[in-house]
Image (cartoon, rainbow, N blue to C red; front, top):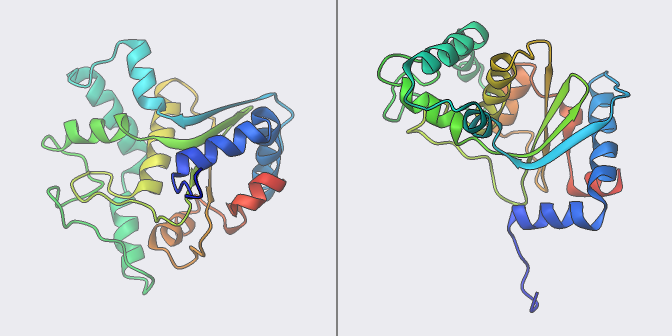
Length: 223
């Protein structure tokens, strides 16, 4: 507008779905991402933009972030799924690849939950937003869209890195609502070459993200 490019990822993404028919675009995208990962689904899809699933679940179920029993349940689910995540990240950092900044903030043992960090951990899940989530049967596709910006990392969080935090939130939430068999499939949409980005490399090391599901904006628009 007025000859000024709007660099907001939220605006660009919203316009992409408005201009290209949201459900049609999401369906094409889901088929591509599932196919890349070796899956297929004939289920009707559902999608949401700017999804805060954990926060919305807590609101509906009347779970308070200060409820000790609820916090302990969520921490237990996290530990069942991600007990060795901090070790995996340390192992990655010793692999010679682009290092992740970790254990430099307020919580010196990032990705480990203790009595001191429980509340912050819940807040991390509560505030996690995912740009696009598509449900196709038992598959939950979680997508982060970037223009020229990089992925955020917040050293004062227990779950420091954006892409990891999104995956953790999605997995914990599925288990929390009894969808343990649901499969989480991350994807990234970006204008930049992110092959050497530390979060991308870690996600691939963890087998959570495959290179084929790193897409461009034109890939999304054109199917």
